[in-house]
Image (cartoon, rainbow over all chains, first blue to last red; front, side, top):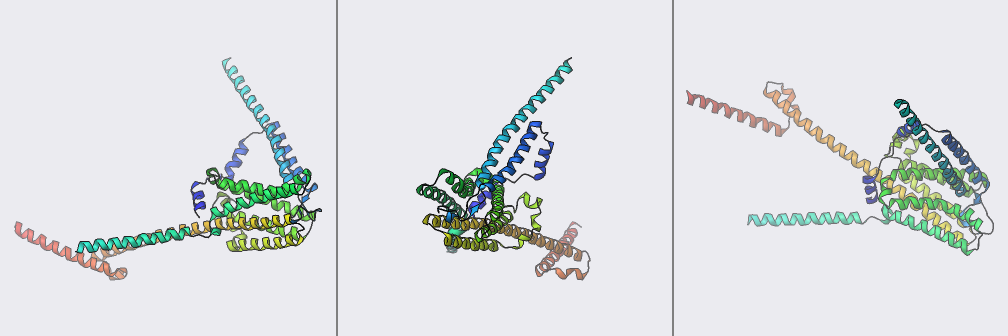
Length: 117
Length: 297
């Protein structure tokens, strides 16, 4: 049990779900960020549909046979679609975050100029 | 002569104690390979690497199209690649630090695999697909009830009240083993080539080794819980002994100050000797005081 004892000494505890929900709840989403989240949810279900539409050859014994005896859900295609859609949606999410930061900087500059006047 | 005898005895005693300690160390080292988590982890990494290498080499050797390789071979190897990432991460400090996070990732992965096997049943209903679904569901429940124990999620999701806690560690492990062996036999019956047979064997070995890894972590958590319980019991016993000794002292004081005889029921023989010694000591003090007063006068 030495490996597990080492892990027990070194490991970090999981964060509380309440802290995660609080942080997500306090964050104000932009229009672009909401668009990115909606697109990701659609791509999530698309991945499941495509995984079912393009099945792979199942059971390791018949992988190299001429004919496929059983087909199975294409898990790798689903993961691939999820990963690619995550990258695209992250790009839009980051764009929205940059726009949010720029608008907040603009608002603070406007406040400073008003105070100076 | 007396000094030399005692020094000889001390030497002999220390030699025996060191010998016992060496035996204990040897016993610690003599763990079987299937009880050593680091050996099991290394074997898992080796088996996964062999599965990926053999599957790719067999695919190239049988002149398969690139689309078929991407579709079927990658699908077969995707779960192995992700679990390889998990076990390789455990070998580094960062993996040990984020062990609970990796376990959550592993549970999510097996949840997705179980989810995929449900859809597989709708695609091709057979004994093999049913067995694989049952195996994946058992694995998922086993992972949740092992890796989430002792974490915050165990308390937050109130998994203490889960009915699957009734199933023992051995129950989970041996049921997975039985299903893996039955799956192996079904696959071997339907195997038409040497390549498929080799891959099926490696799949079965991987399943059993992975179940063994989870079994070892479950038993580690059980032993940790037992140790903490023993420590708590020891502390409670010492507190009880201290409380009893305090009570004895209080009862002795009560008796000396004119308390009832019934309170002395719990006084031990040692305490009785103490009481008599104290009485004798006080008598002597009084006598000495009397002598001093006479001397002063």
